[in-house]
Image (tube, rainbow, N blue to C red; front, side, top):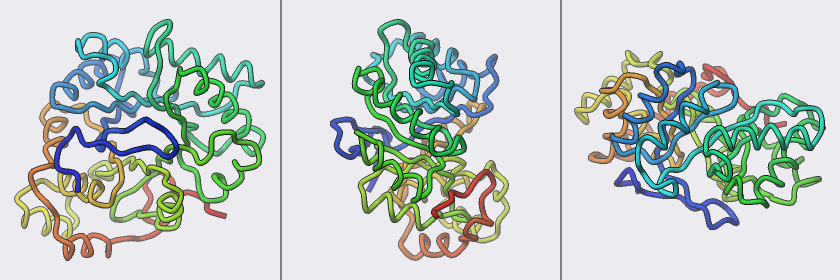
Length: 281
């Protein structure tokens, strides 16, 4: 059971271990992102999640260097959304991100395919470019995001690295994606939960409020704790300094099995997604 922010999970077929709680920077504007990352690191986070699509990889890299923390003490993830036309061009696009974040000769801890939307040929090109980056040590681990069962199964036809180390998907009580979560668990794939606090859309949900009051914690803290107890790696995002700290302060309480079941009962399947539910077949 996760009891401190520095707890780690092992990735499949890899020596790499990932911190149980991450800090997301989706839509964190460039003038704000660096400040938020520095605040997160001060609050104890050691796992930052960005993406090419977010447009703030450079700010994340600068904040890492400004923090004074040794590079090997912070786990950094980024993502690529679409291939660049050829394996070589796609690889160059990956390498550009690595250097934007880590400088020449740097690395990222985890590089993900952001979406399966580029079709079979595009997914294959992206993965093979990621495998090259991984083989060179410029990405310590590689994985996918928004992939359903069919997408991970099809990788067997071309992947040298299988299973992917991570699958990052939308997860919270209203969108539990049980089919893909069970599949990932079966294959040892670490599941990351984006939008774990549902962008505060559910802050007034009566069941959630009742549970939060019971534990004398905020609804956001309960949702993050719920994700941790499910075995997921939640990636809460905020640019509010107090909220950033509060979202990390979730290791001083434990949600009972009964209350976990109560939160489980809120599941709406695909209809509960605010971003995207995966396609499993």
